[in-house]
Length: 97
Image 1 (cartoon, rainbow, N blue to C red):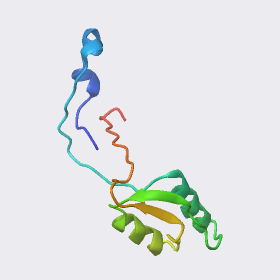
Image 2: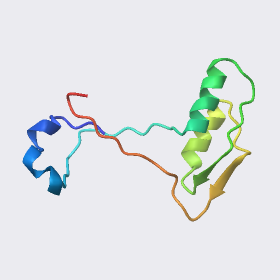
Image 3: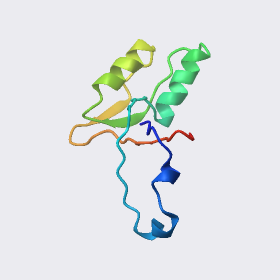
Image 4: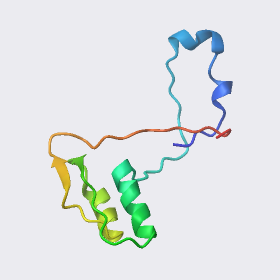
């Protein structure tokens, strides 16, 4: 997520002990990640054939599986957890990076 200002303009150092923030962002991008997926993708860029990901993923796996297939990475060793979402991280950067 990209915040169009600077966090330092909105966070008061003397109030850090009770910090609770909410920012409106200008944009949000989704990037596929995970150590196993990133390594498998890097191996395909190095022209290594048939990297295998051994991991688990939540019921929201469809777009990630499409991306893996498009990049020649098998999903046969990925366990789908039907009653969970895939783990994720939300990172917000400000104008200062």
